[in-house]
Picture 1 (cartoon, one colour):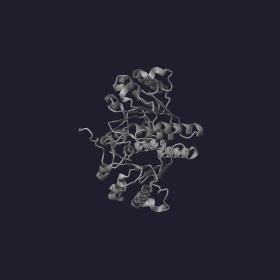
Picture 2 (cartoon, chains in turn green, yellow):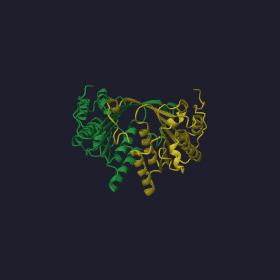
Picture 3 (tube, one colour):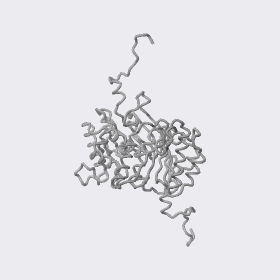
Picture 4 (spheres, chains in turn green, cyan):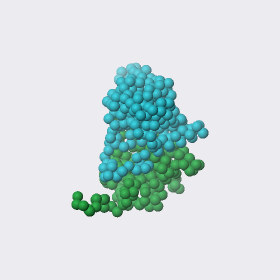
Length: 204
Length: 204
């Protein structure tokens, strides 16, 4: 290299610190277990950083409560009581979104999914959270309930420090393309293969 | 099927309920992210069931504390204060196991790993916990610090209701063979590929 020529730096207009702390779009996909569980595990890290985190469960039948919800809500309570960690919200579509007054929307899954996405868009525009978990979000996109181009556009142009984790099988290629970190969970062996049923503490 | 012939039931001497709640050996392997994070996420479910859980981090350099440790220890504190959830222990090799008095053992990684495994064996024999997370346990096995046959034998013959999750790359085939549930985490895309460094809240 000729003397005096500066080393090449990325042409992205960012400082080194900004580049290091670039907000990530993370995808957990594949047919194996652990996609959602690892996303909720990441929420533990965010909580410990004092981030504001929100989980949005796009599951039709999520009227029941999984263990992670109870545990993460306890961490939110600790934050409120002591100031440790960060705030943590948990919203699920199955029983009607908690912020929604339309009690009947849970009956119309397409409308409920679209409503969930509109709320997430508003929050991303307002930079409400540092971490968003969009759990099983590939399904409403694949079923045409949420517009893929709108999702890609919103995530591509989001401002500030907002990490987004999306889980689900058959993730649209346009989201994989846009993502910074993509992990595929592959089933090698599962107890269901031997006729064993799901059990408490493992499946929920 | 001739009338009067009973339906075939598994010849394992278990009741249906016992078969349903069979303790699992779970493995998270592969080169992708999410192996440990999903294991710690499962610990949230166990906590919510009131199980006694223990994490053993077999990481040479785990002198630092990851976010999950702080968050899970907070849940242990909630259990102690209010009785909600279950007890949760977190042990790591990097700073010397917390139960060990040998301050110097952290210098000798092989001895420290063997010591960790001996303690886990004692606890499994005593049925101390309902959930064990043996984090990055494939490494000390592959390095010959912990005997594979001993691990397989101990896990195969464990009694009671003890779930065991083992994480790490290059999981020995004998453990995969023995496991009930195996998920491989595969890297599709990672920010390190573009020269980005690890960041707070995502990597730890």
